[in-house]
Image (cartoon, rainbow, N blue to C red; front, side, top):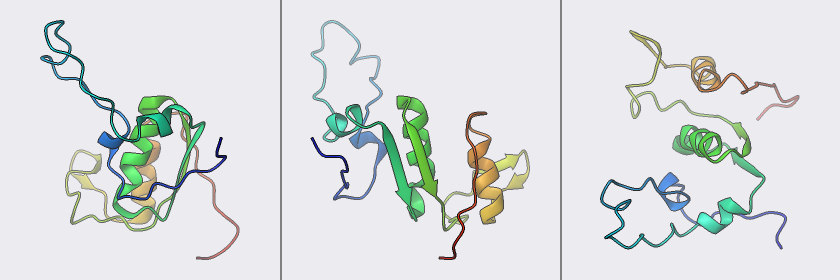
Length: 119
């Protein structure tokens, strides 16, 4: 067993877990094949994203949904790509501090820590 696995493709949450549609949950339709990296997630105890760019929020969402611990070191906010992110109604997420607050608001168990180095 590997103690560490690196995902060799661009991160997409659907590669790890699928949300079945109403048709897929019907007994008349055979279940779809598992997502390509579902086994990787099922064997993971921790999900990590270091400078994950646009994947930061999906990593957090995936970890929360799958019940895995996680650590992310967010970098860029990409406010122009995610204009619907809001801290509260009418308050868009534009800065790194706002982005961290936005991520923490997803679950009361999320904690923030500062790393003792630059970069």
